[in-house]
Amino acid sequence: MGIRIKAATAAVAAGLLALTACGSTAGTGSSDDGTTLRISGFSVLGQANVPVFKAFQATPAGKGVRFQTSYGASGDQSRAVDAGQKADVVHYSLETDVTRLVKSNLVSADWNKTPTKGIATSSVVVLVVRKGNPKHITGWDDLAKPGIKIITPDPGSSGSARWNILGAWAHITGNGGSEADAKAYLTKVLKNTIALPGSGREATTAFTSGSGDVLISYEDEAIEAKQAGDDIDYIVPSDTLRIDNPAAVTVGANPKAKDFLNFMTSAQGQKIYAQEGFRPVISGVDVGQVKGANNPSDPFPQPKQLFTIDQNFGGWSKAADKYFGDGQNGDPLGIITALQKSTGKVGSN
Image (cartoon, rainbow, N blue to C red; front, side, top):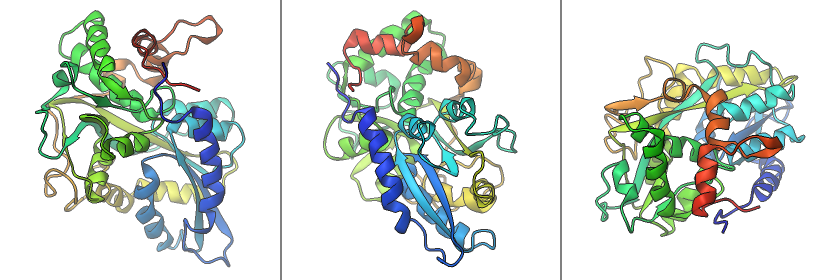
């Protein structure tokens, strides 16, 4: 039985509506300039981008620029642009959501030939719990215990969901376990999962509205929820997966798009993103105090083990099909897709 809260088609439609609806309010630039940048991004950027836009508009390059925004599940946003939704800058959860647009000639093949290798924001997978941690969650092993109710987004639409579940997988294989051990562990985790919302933001909303005991999420999403006053805590597991979110300008984009992308990955842009809970993707950024972090003075602690998609999974070019393949065109189902089907925890369209 499908338990995804929002279907992919609905999310794509919502993104299209957001692009139109937000155009008049997403920027404060002068209407005389006539420069509008269209931003397509994964859901948790909705709040984080607001101060980034404002700071860019205060620079000489950003004077007079306005923004139109479309946010939603990363995969849905990418598919919408692939289907014709206009965008000047895309900022997604997964590399594969950008490379989809490369294949369609909408993004240049050298998009990741930048000082940050195309990465604009970064985070780690964390476990969000109720205030005071009444279920005494301390790490990944607790998610497989009987009676723990888990919420995490749907890997079929959400990039954050794929990072989340690979973080759980790496906890087993990165500590000496076999693929069979990882499958057995994830089977228990999926059986404990009570909801698979369509995006990371929808998952957070479901959790903060009272559903579940633990939410698997991005660290930045947890920090932002605390900044908003939600009564939660979060745990950075001793071993977790680093999350790298790519961004690129589209082919034929307004020239200001490259200026904005450069600003996003500048020291000033990265400090603003850090204030919103993202880990800087460049060195030497003085992030200062980060409200909502477990320790605002030391907001981004280094886990004892930090897994990466490249070192532990061979990169997204290999991991996407191996773990999340949909079985179309005679290809085998991905490991996670097959586990979702076997446990009945699959998205519905």
